[in-house]
Image 1 (tube, rainbow, N blue to C red):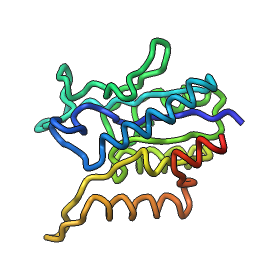
Image 2: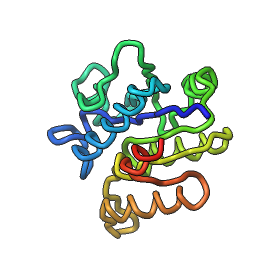
Image 3: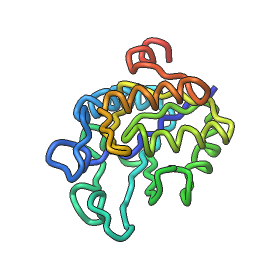
Image 4: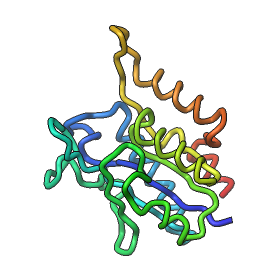
Length: 182
């Protein structure tokens, strides 16, 4: 079974000093880099997804800024696929589906940020397209949210979304588990 890696929005603006720092982003970069190394060693398909914010009022991932660049921890090598997107779902308006089909991928490993937005939307869509999905829980990070006056900590957002994805849409594993079994 061909397995592909999709790294979602591991971009400078989510790291310390960026426009929207996500808690735990340095650790996510490290863990995603470990996965990336595995896929490079095995010569398995790798796809980097880069979000560009062009909607009015956007404050991060702005085109032509350092914050939009893919973080150095997972910087693409020449020949690795880079897909630019404008929506949370990495399939919407992109060639991600075609790239996975061309690679003959049946299983897709996902890592990136933010778990409650782009990772969630993309994994659910991949499942609907018939892919077997695996989410690297320690190579993803969520941000805190507020709803109706309630503040929800990032770690609680992360647990809720990974729990939901793991119930139907994906296997949720650690990078260590993947390194040992892939």
